[in-house]
Length: 304
Image (cartoon, rainbow, N blue to C red):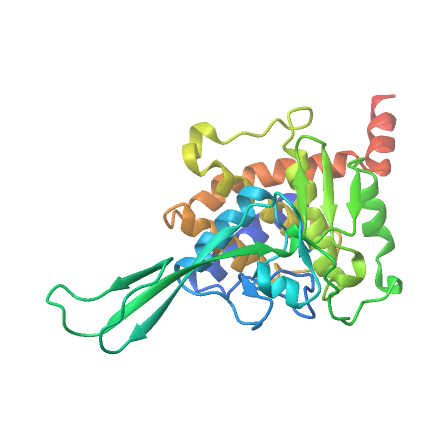
């Protein structure tokens, strides 16, 4: 029995909910950066991810400033790699803690911390100014394996082209810029696989569908201060639905569930939020289908 579109969307949503409830894995960007995907902010010198509060501080800074990548370093670390932080760029701050023994005077930029009675382990916290990869020039990224253009999927290329949303490639990450009504994407070859590319493109197209001159999507009444999280839920659900429609993924990919779980956490584990977002996602997917040439031809035939 062939599923209709409504059945597909319901199944995709329910499978994602089941994956989240069973414990979704950590989300990883589907495009390669410095030779590998990054699940959270990493330091360019050590290659290690930042930890604790630094993870959240850099996530917030990257989101607020529109950085697509998660690679960070101090001014000196970038300079050691032949890169130059652009003039006027604003740094983000990370903090590192070091346990110390005996008496020690904290120097500038350090905070000496110990327990209330002066005993027990003592730590020194030192703040560092770091800059994102998007803030520097002259950094030559190591060559990474590239997927060839021969892996592009013709009917998927036609589907997204028919939407009429301009796309600029060569970006360090993926985002939709509302003020330009334009999508920015890494090059096709930087993705781990073709499906990851089309999934990401579908996600950004879903954001574009919410623009005022399209679906005029808004969440201020339902989610108030969590409108950004709600918008991300819709975009990722839309991507899962569209991939199923295009025959690129019969079932939701694990990264869909992991990405959605990260935003549901911001919505205070409101698992029902995904169903509220699902109706908006279906509207976005339907809008995309309505812009396809075969849909227009069918509508014209039915009207005559």
